[in-house]
Image (tube, rainbow, N blue to C red):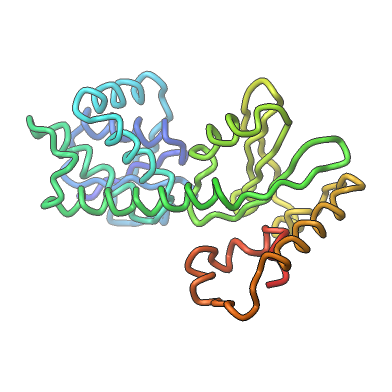
Length: 255
């Protein structure tokens, strides 16, 4: 009989569900986030409480069996939020713990291959947003950037922006997921904003600095002057800067 483990959606919660699997060893199991769970009359249900100690035990075990790159791959797959990621991760972790060899690079295993492919996609998204985030100065001196990534890359890009913009307070807000990361010149903290009618409008409640519009015009003017109309190649441009990023980039908003 299939058993469904329901967890709260956090990484700690997922690792707690993995711990519960190894503790109980059901024949068939699926791990599902609470918000995605669809009742099934033919499956048993167990709600797994997020447990820091259990999650830490699983993570310590993975550290002994994997390289630091392999651990990053596990976390990146979790951040992908793809509907299948729990199934892939659970099967990979089972294989990692039960095989005496290091199997993180064994791509003859379908699950290991899928894990690597998903992690690469998340990695590409991370690098793009490290390049494409555009800050806008608010009236209170905070630099704000709204983004809408396909994957949940905020935890991955936080170190880059903390190093690069260590001398100014900033907030990068994921509009799609209604949360952001805020740097206050000391540390980075997660901030959450409740759902609202303005969720799709990244500037719904923002008061901009008086000079911000001038800076944006300057960016756009610079872009027009360095652009060579005769060599315009929109197909190539979209390969490097997909259209879904353009609306949050002031310098090419009118392209």
